[in-house]
Length: 129
Image 1 (cartoon, rainbow, N blue to C red):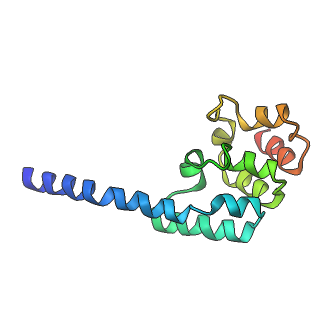
Image 2 (image 1 turned 90 degrees about the vertical axis):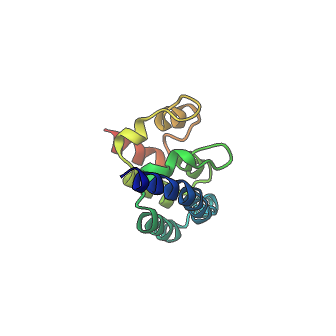
């Protein structure tokens, strides 16, 4: 019993770093996709990550930064309405309401930076209500 536990732990430790490297490669150009407002390519990338790693957008959203901002903030800054509204629809209300690295939730940040009246900001408000 101890041998199988040790072998399983060792196997997990050896495989895990490679799994994280692969997901980083798969998510490498996601900021470019958001900036270009390419909803089809974003869907494809999200589907690949979900199929290969069993992860949804909310699972890896906080680990991605584009120019120091989260994906939705970055989409607001680049006026990437299709991609921004798509991500808002795919994320849970809990994740959308959570404070980000600067301590502000997306809605608070959008209000303070003048993005709340944008198409993405209005989708966010509608989703959170």
